[in-house]
Length: 265
Image (cartoon, rainbow, N blue to C red; front, side):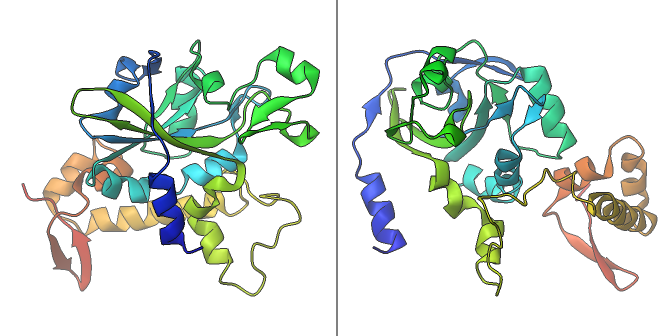
C-alpha cells in the first residue's frame, strides 16, 4: 500500500470527542488541552519519555526531538501545532530542553491522567503483573515493561471549541518522522544497528559534539565580526543562537564576498 493510501486510511479513522479535561504545566502557566492548539485546528502531541531513573529524557525520544524544530515553523504556518508532553516536572523538562538546544514546547502532564489515558504511562500495579496495554495490544515482553513509553497522539478542534482525538501511534509508528533514519536507509550500511537505536545518544553526548559546537560558535563569531554594527550591538545582550533564530529569513546582503542575513531595522 502506498504512503498516500495509508495516510488516506488514517484520516478516515473515527474521531472520539474528548469529555475529560486535562491541564498541563507550561512556561506560561497552566493550560488545558484545548488551549494548546494556540489558534490552530490541529494538534500533534509527542509523548516524550522522562527517565526518572536517570533524571533526564529518554535518548531515543531525544533523537526524535532533534528532528522537530526545522519542520515546526512550516507546521505552524499550515494549521498544525506541535507540542511534546512528558510526565517529568516542568523545571526538569525546561532545563533538559535548553541543554539540548530545542525550541519547541516541552510541557508537563505531571499529576494528570493524560499519559495513562493515552497508554504511554503505566501504574506500578500493571508493571507488577507483568502486563501492560500498549500499541493497541496487551504486552508481556520485558523490554516494554517500563513506567513510560513513547508515542504520538493527534487532536482536532472544531469551530465550537470541541476537541477530538483522531489518531495515536506508538513504538515503531514514529519511524517515518525520523529523518536521520531516512538518510541512513540510502546508504550501503543502512541503519547499521543490532537493536533499535542501540547507537543513538543525546546530541551533546557524542564524542564530536564539543568540536561541532565550537565550530558553530567560531562561525557565528565570524559572522558578527563582519556584520552591520547594529547586529554586533544587539549580540552583546543576546546569544548568537537566539539572535539568529529571531532574524532568520530576513533580507540578505553580501559582505566580503560572503552572504549574511541582515534584519530590517
